[in-house]
Length: 310
Image 1 (cartoon, helix red, strand yellow):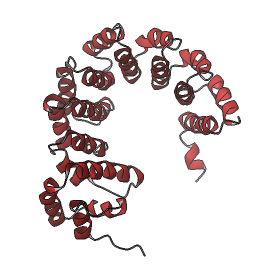
Image 2 (cartoon, one colour):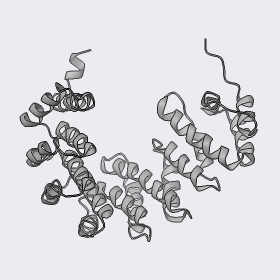
Image 3 (tube, helix red, strand yellow):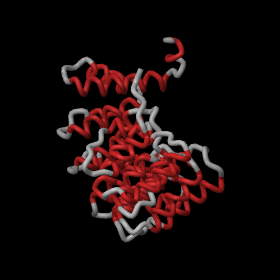
Image 4 (cartoon, one colour):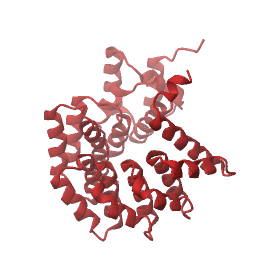
């Protein structure tokens, strides 16, 4: 039987910089009872800055590694921290929070937070809500709130924020205003902005962008080839099967892996043959990626396959 983690002892360890704390001790802050949450909130501002940063980052990593740990309450408090790094970690920790309160907070952060990196992370968080809107999982009122809130920040003076906002708006890809914004970004000479335009094209699932996506698969820039391959996969663009297959031999490893993933999304006989050959190859990482893509391809072709193997 696992030893129970004592909340008070764990809190004392992160407060006292003379004590070392293990990540195991931090599990005491998962699913805190209201009384312990209150104690945590009183103690948190008293903790040394470097310690707060380390704890916030460690909590994010713990939550990613163990789905049974829930630091939602702690992260919601930490997102009000005076330090930008702590706020940024809290946003990352709340990646799966789909609550209306968190949506409202993200809209506030992307518009008003004094730190550019925090605003950029807030825009990344809003991409989740844009996806929920696109898939019909938000009310019309909340969908409009997400759409309008993102558009208000589209022309932010900070490139990082503008890029992430554009990527999130990609989910509203049938909107004429979004189409114009994507085109304008794609025509820009800035490579990062063009990469974000390609990501938004893929998320739009709007095949009007097939010529642009196909063109960038032969770009001299690996980042653009990567985003083009990913966009083709997002669109399930069978029209681009051959260009994606050619990217499997790209000199850039990340581009190759993006192409393998895309083939699993596009499907079809040619994709299947290419993935099977890679799955049987000597490159273990590539073989595993191809095997995962084949599983995705098989499931997409017949969702009942998984039931048949139970």
